[in-house]
Length: 133
Image 1 (cartoon, one colour):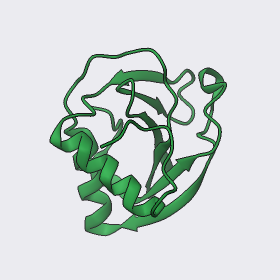
Image 2 (cartoon, rainbow, N blue to C red):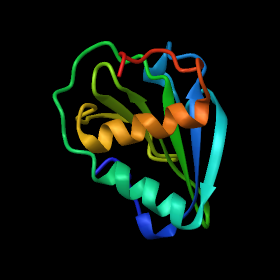
Image 3 (tube, helix red, strand yellow):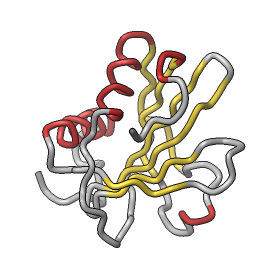
Image 4 (cartoon, rainbow, N blue to C red):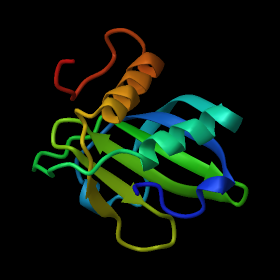
């Protein structure tokens, strides 16, 4: 499960375009700009989609183009940066110290659905760092 903590406490999810993927090993927050924010049932559905992403074989590049910021009633729950090339997701939980990399299957229906949501939020011609669909 990529989404740590209490998924029932999700209030808002921000879809984010990562602006600089270098130095990710030292990130305490994902550098990026919010493309769109979703709340209510849409936020719950998005976190459920991420929680249901199947495991995948981790590769090496990790050049994330998109991320999620998951907010609960008490503030930021976590941030997850996704690289759809190497099938890695960097999970950052505020106040928990070191972040972790998790593998996910970017080619699965759930992975492709998530990528499509990012691309739709990003607009035509804006997405970079992803392999062609």
